[in-house]
Length: 191
Image (cartoon, rainbow, N blue to C red; front, top):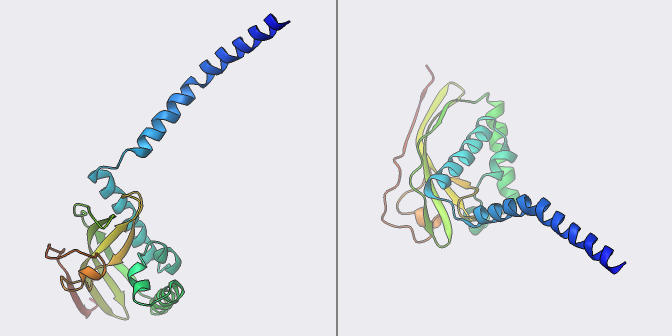
């Protein structure tokens, strides 16, 4: 009896090893790729993907969606709670909706090279947009400042429209002296 039981256990052991070998290989490779850091191209692609999601939220005037992709730490550091931020953006978007505002253009440009400061990944993504509200066009050339706390896998953003070399340190502590993407702002009557 002992010999029969041993053969059965031995047969199960070999079967278990052969059936699970592909799974073990898959699991090992999956863990290996999860541990490998992303390269700059992957990080930029992820940032562009999330910035495009933000643009779609903004074009739809969807405050919940836009806020989910907004880096709020800077606002919280200045005393604004997440709830206050959510309400402010919701009210702003509701006003734009009631004024029948539309983005006639919102184009993202190629992201700048990502960089790390203080353990966080950052990236600048320039944009050009035209917002039409009550017969007025607002043309803006600015940039999103992307912030990632997971090594570039996912991103949240701050609009850099009012960011200058003097105040960039509030968003990116320790960032100083380096160039920022160009900015321009113009309002005109709609054509």
